[in-house]
Amino acid sequence: MILLIGGTKDGRDLAKDILNSNFKVLASTATEYGKDLLGKHPNLTVIYGKKDYNDMIEIIEKYKIKCIVDASHPYAENVSINAIKAAKNKNIPYLRYEREKTEISGIFKVKNYNEAAEALKDTTGNIMLTIGSNNLEVFSKLDKNRIFVRVLPLSNVLKKCEMLGFSPNNIIAIQGPFSKEFNKELYRQFDIEFIVTKDSGEEGGTRNKIEAAIEDGIKVILIERPKIYYGAIYSEKSKIIDRLNNLCL
Figure: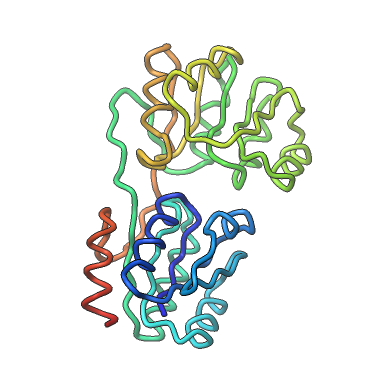
């Protein structure tokens, strides 16, 4: 059985490709919502919830995992680190599938969320955060009246936003990715002067978000991807399938 760590759309697509190649797949997603999106297949088992290193070891042993395919989000740092360690401990192959980076000039890059918040500390004008909900607390010390958070429309996410002090007027609960034109309309609607985003790749709508901002004179702060040594990284699903055929058949 192949352990696929995913939850994103391209991770779900990869799961289908692996299943269609006659492998049994155990898919692990962070949320129940991600689990539901995977659908059903006779050779697919799905589990959800955040997994630490010990959880990974237990899963490998329980399901007799032959290989780990890590298709988690580029910013799910801890998940990947735990998967790499667990694969090494159990002496099984680890394959990293990752979206290619988005190369765009004219933006301000920072290494982490704290640097992004620091860069905004002495600015004026409205800010849109398009970084998900996991690190919103880093920005909660800024003037919340000028911060608009774009997050998934999930009850636990909305609850977190409210607990951090963001008012309903400043919460944009909507699921992307969106076209460049739609992004522009959102920026104009909320009079945005800064956006903070991550490099989630073309599939995650990064280019459309950034180009829409640049064309309207909005300053872009991009949080760079964590630097993790994965070994070989594959950005084509077909190459993952080829490696699985070589390793696990």
